[in-house]
Length: 258
Image 1 (cartoon, rainbow, N blue to C red):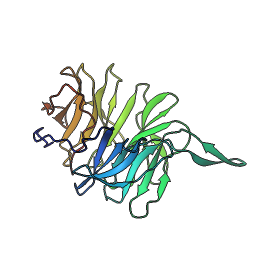
Image 2: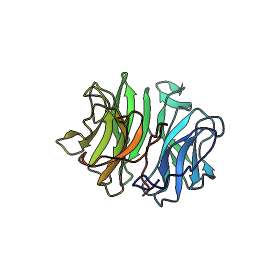
Image 3: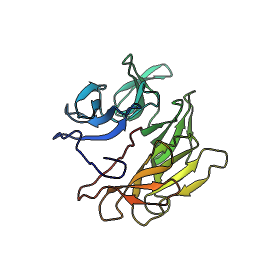
């Protein structure tokens, strides 16, 4: 749909599940999660819904892809089996959701995170060198940062559920969902030494799925404040909330065209 909610059209229109879209940097394609082959896989489609390339196949569930800023890679989560070096040899790790990256030119796929736990909802930094993601370790969802050295840092470190991060276009902050105030709200966390945390929605309803506009001035998000889950947009300070969709069904996981 247009950024004002008009000209809504069905891109995929299939009987199977298609979701979690992410735009290519040139705005010509989408990478999505799809069950068209019977298993959740990652597909690249054009804006008519036609498959351009299926980049995962078998080997567990592969979901929630995101295109890299330079257009050369696709980040996704997968619970495929992998082998991990251990003292005295190797261990086979089964059903353990981790972040993987797919190189579009070579087709090579590399696991980025390791250990036990669930790693999902990765979001690239604007320069493509780092990633923020949700991880469930010690039974508590947190937001971690993965740096080029493969070092992983907990940037939320709170007993509440912190999920679904999105890195700002200027690289200075991250937005995410959290129920630390009793219900799901959208928070902005600055990435400087102060680490200022701001509740942007501050509403009794549940708000989530934050997605930055390309200019960094607005956020699209979902909310059930009007009875069911719809897509809204607001200014980056939380003001100027406008409802974009209006349908009895749930509308989720917005993504801005570059």
